[in-house]
Length: 251
Image 1 (spheres, rainbow, N blue to C red):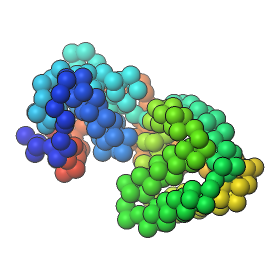
Image 2: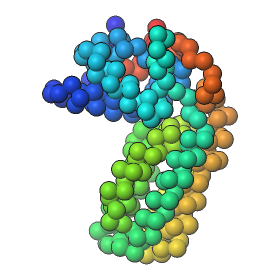
Image 3: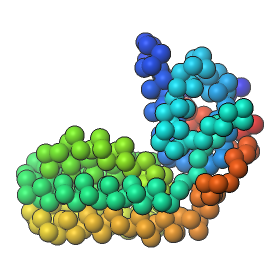
């Protein structure tokens, strides 16, 4: 049996526990800790989180709504592959919101905002791993929307970009991609701090549209994440990180 999880679930109503489990599994799937077509056993997850199967089933149902897992009655639950059409749909939504927000951020950026944005870039530049790099990436985009005075819009972006994030996590594994992303971020921040609305919008649009090239690169480098949506799910034997971070052999 897997080791007890390190994440502490907050005791309370079943729905609250289900949401915590959903968020935790979502992060792991998006980060690539669980790979496409990998089986997610309700019994194993219940034992891992030390809960009944009911909140596990509810969490998996929410993941299915986001197309992150496929649930086949009498057969099992499996991590869904990355579907490129969904990635491009995510990008469309994200570009519409973030390009609108970045112009406002450039107009409203204060000296305090500029210092915070420079600190985020410095943090990303020195990030020791892909996860820290990705976290700083997220902080930068969210901060720009906040500077624009549209913090509530981040919830829409965050919900829409789940498939994009799977690509972004794969890309962040590679040093050459981290370098190019950082360069693009620096251009965006420089334009915002200079109050260059047009330049900021162009820099953000160029950055976000980089997902088209990244998708092709990651499909070549990590084809196992892009198996066709019509492929029949099957159990796979892979190293599966436990929610606490340790790698366990999947049965």
